Image (cartoon, rainbow, N blue to C red; front, side):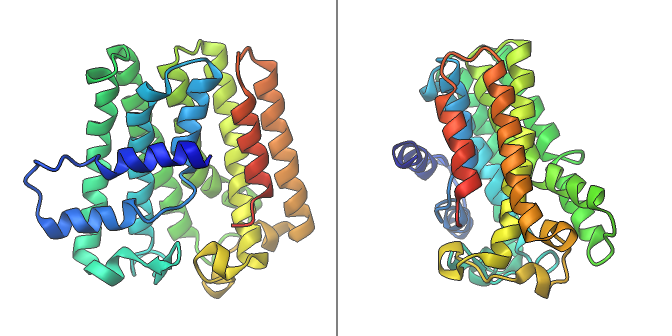
Length: 291
């Protein structure tokens, strides 16, 4: 993970061409959040899915950067006063606390838009078939959009303090978190020429580990170390957000994380992947993480 993350970080650092005429403050605001660290989970999943099919990780790198830009834009907007109103992200002041609300919104807008330019480079620089890159861009618009991540965010905002069913919470987690994880896996698979059966397996794997990942986040909000998390704990409770531990308790939530991880791994193992080891290891890592 450290080696692959270093490649992603280096690519992200040069993702906005130096020669482009961009207002310096906007460039700085984009870079502030994009280069703030984090697990880089979604880019790693793009690369690992390509590797699982013996595909080119170099060709997958532009799409790995694209999904990280989309993820980063969503965090910048999530932290805004009108949304979650957070002061810290990954141990640093949130974007709007440094650059102001207006520039934070525009930095998020710019990262989202630039993601599609980055994804196009898989074709322009690395020769990934244009049809596959078109499929990837279509997927990105869907999984990040109104019926995907943004839909999950909207349901989260609309349902705050009013959720009474676990199914409603699962809808939010599935779309707010799992959809970008599913996109990442499908994108890596498409770059490596995955067949329909393999794409279906990657999708099922992604939804399982994506939900497990978010439930683990719910758990860590209760039990985690604030220093490791880089943000205050018990924030869900303070904001009166209902979570998996709220509905089913901590022990049952931990058991559900294990069940989902196992389900995802079994789906992957049943499909015909030449090198699935990294994906399986990442699933285990996510289950055991403490931040």
